[in-house]
Amino acid sequence: MGLLDFLSEIFDGNSSRENKTYIDENGYRRFSDSDKLVSRWIVEKKLGRRLNQDEEVHHRDRNKLNNRPGNLEALTPEEHNREHGLPDDYNLDYDNDLDDYDDDF
Image 1 (cartoon, rainbow, N blue to C red):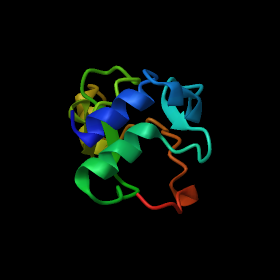
Image 2: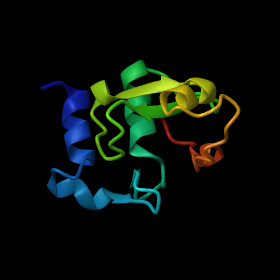
Image 3: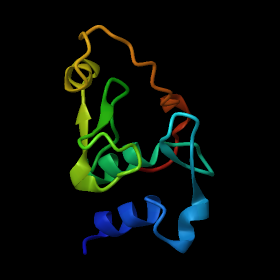
Image 4: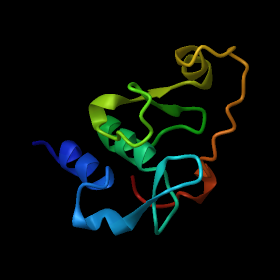
């Protein structure tokens, strides 16, 4: 098992470290100490860089709690909308709070 798979298991809630994360009002897992989306953090680790503000994380199986690296991909808002059958200019109003993430990725 690789590091990212191990981390995704932890943050899927399959570990005693589950208390370091919580599920927000939209059904996404976030870190308790920073409110950062776990899915964004895992994709940043997977890509080896921070995501840009105009990148969104798509859960391929549409399960918001499946944060395994193979299930996540970074998309532009337009690409993400197309994956969900929405017009390119539709705003899903994701709460990414990107300006609050000063931590290392």
